[in-house]
Length: 64
Ligand code: SF4
Image (cartoon, rainbow, N blue to C red; front, side, top):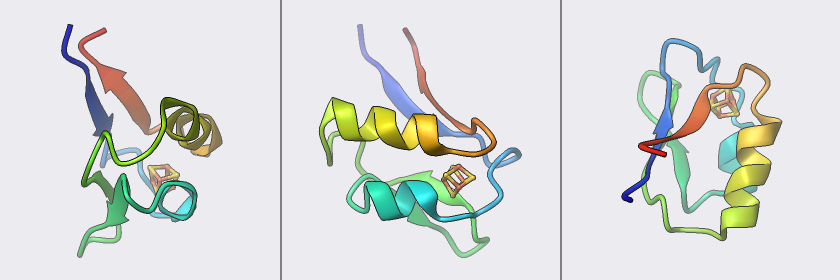
């Protein structure tokens, strides 16, 4: 099963927490929203930490 890491840009408030935790996975785009740049850029555990740390629950795995 292929999983796709997604950020819901409608929910994202651009706080930068996910970028700080996993800078190889997430980056803020020109609109100040996080987007996934490399979903295998960090360990599952660290990505899960970013998912858990997002204050608005904008990050999720799709296709589970
Ligand atoms: Fe957006 Fe959540 Fe990342 Fe903050 S932690 S930048 S709200 S996706």
